[in-house]
Amino acid sequence: MEKILIVEDEVKISRIIDLQLKYAGYETDLAFDGTEAIEKVGLNKYDLILLDVMMPKTDGLTACNAIKKMHPDMKIIMLTAKDDIQDVINGLDSGADDYVTKPFIFDELLARIRANIRKKAQFTPTTDLIVFEDVIINSVTYEVSRAGNAVELSKTEFDLLKHLIINKNIVLTREQILNKVWGYDYYGSLNIVDVYIKYLRDKIDRDYSRKLIQTIRGRGYVVR
Image (cartoon, rainbow, N blue to C red):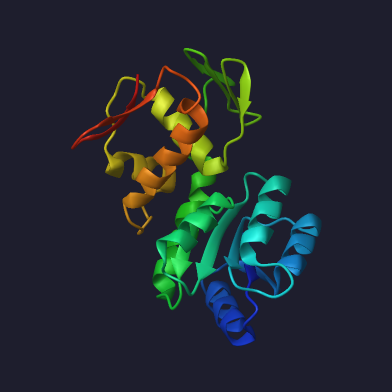
């Protein structure tokens, strides 16, 4: 049974989510601020975390960043009452794998939870190392380097880069990328692919004259 940590400072909302997830067959645990969440993650094993953005003591963005440093593979869905794109970007920058804007329909939240938990088993490398030109990806340690320089990537950025490189020279549509990296049950906007492509370009291509990630207008993206 998968275990989910619910981090929400509003007790009523927390209890409702707790009851709904238990009814759906998940084991749950509760934390009511970012500091408590970080402490619980250090002591317990979770499959996914639902993390509110606005909380006392330690906010969700800070907690997300700290948790990802402890457990890079941890799946985190941010819960936010804000719908401004900058808040979404801040959440993704802090390491979140997905986000849901409150108020939300529970069936949508449940679908996102299922999709993110399944993502753990999506990539099964046939070899530890994947090499493309001067880029080296270690599928076991999640280390990436280009031209001998280490590149720090979030889990989603890592999965996206690996998927592009495994399919080098093949133009992938946003839908294809979304289905493989985020999962078929992901209900968010296709724009999240564009956001993460920008993240990758900033980390992989920006400091090099040879640009690996290319946009094929009207079709999608390709590494070649």
